[in-house]
Length: 297
View 1: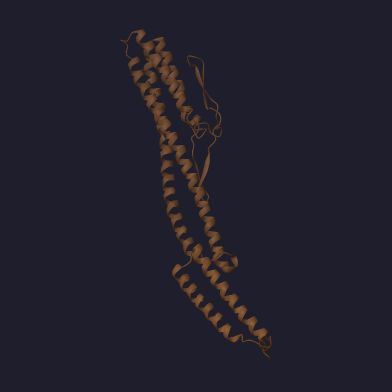
View 2 (view 1 turned 180 degrees about the vertical axis):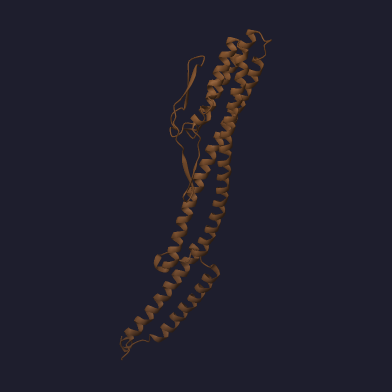
């Protein structure tokens, strides 16, 4: 087979181009810090990277869900804490009002205090977070409790019994709310307990006022039970958040190891390829000798 100058030139140029492509690849790894930029560079590595990124994206959403759920339930717990304090004040008023030595004027003043406590209770029951009402069930955009009359004769519930579920881990859903009907109108109607106390104070019925103390105690227990449920869910969410953080760190480290380039090795390969390229240029210049036509010209 006859080797021509054209063939030699073509071979030299192809080798030089191949060397330049390898240098470009190493340079790209050096500038991006990643082993590959195209699927063709490492199909298996790219597939693993995409899978890890998908998992991390899901974890990011779960973490966001947990954060929103915790904020929601902390507001609910704080609101129920205010409700408990209000009911405790109402109980103290009831104890005072049951005292037969009080004048009716004194009881009328106590009844006025209960009316104020009733308004505070309604306000706490209408607590909201991010424009959504906490105790309305699924009806988060509608004020769950509305009072009737002045003075208040009833408090109506406008929500439903819906439980709002947040996915906090794959296949795990946690209800972030407790419907107001369970908290305020369960076995004991919390609002009615205060309405009856006020009316009994105005009527001067000390026996009924004394009985109201037991009803208020039941209301306090009902609220405490709801707080216990919320507290247990908060603990569960905080544990999930801690697990999610640990898993996210582990997967992020694995992702960095999968797609990250070994910078020391990349620099070494780049230097080596530069030397190969320079050597190829030098040898190519010697191989490609001037032809007869060059001398004729």
